Length: 93
Image 1 (cartoon, rainbow, N blue to C red):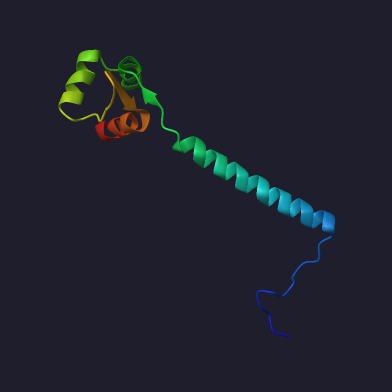
Image 2: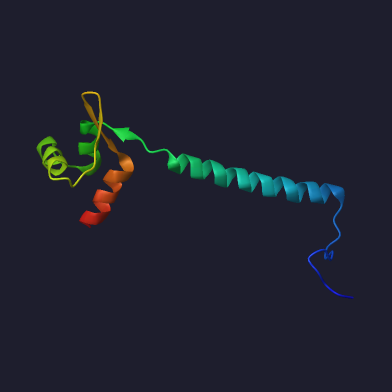
């Protein structure tokens, strides 16, 4: 007998097969949800960014002016991506 990708190796009942498929789908959904949650990048105000970085307002404005911290201008407001701030913290270590 030749073994191929189609060769059965286990006998399952219909109920067991349903459980295997259900657990596989549940795990796949959990991984997709966690990836989507990680993709969401919150925008922080200057005050929130200062708290996050534990620095003063003059320091964050100086770093912004020197190009050390990327920022986003929305109308008259400045916002900072949390992932950018995390990268700044990693580079300062």
